Length: 216
Ligand code: GS8
Image 1: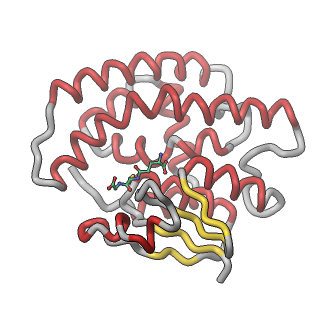
Image 2: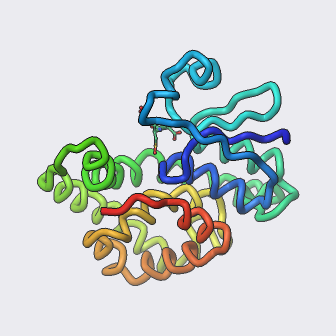
């Protein structure tokens, strides 16, 4: 099999890459990486990603890391297969996909990731969540989602009237957030809520959610 994804489905970044592979309906092998024994810090894995983090997508002789870049590659390489994640036939729409892919990475992710780190990752290491950090991040996320709320009032999805990589890249962190009491930050904004309900009901993303087993 040509494509191999190294990672574990409970990891948000692995799940981001799984979302694109499932939306494309691709045949691939998921190769588990045992984080608890530090397999990702061993020479064999470091040869694939010198930063020692998951996921890595191996396509025969090339290794791709950084989940968003993996998705960009998959969206381009398989542009005519499964869901068109980048609107490659319309340069302006493709440009808007690029805008919202960056918004997720540069604005949404820094606001949401501390919440998930405190509530899901720290307990995995036997550490206690710092709720003051969570509260501050929820407030910051609320301000970001105020902008999303206004935008989604006039646009069904983030880049336009079509589902794209921009929406998909938001999936894993939001999926974990929605299992916490802080789901209210989404549910209290009607257009953000409707957008979330729409994207999270897609069969490919439901399949991703099934593998995201961490709980608070
Ligand atoms: C982040 C990769 C990362 O931190 C991406 O791929 O998007 N920007 C990169 N991966 C985490 C798991 S994320 O669920 C990881 O490998 N953590 C283990 C470690 O840092 O030791």
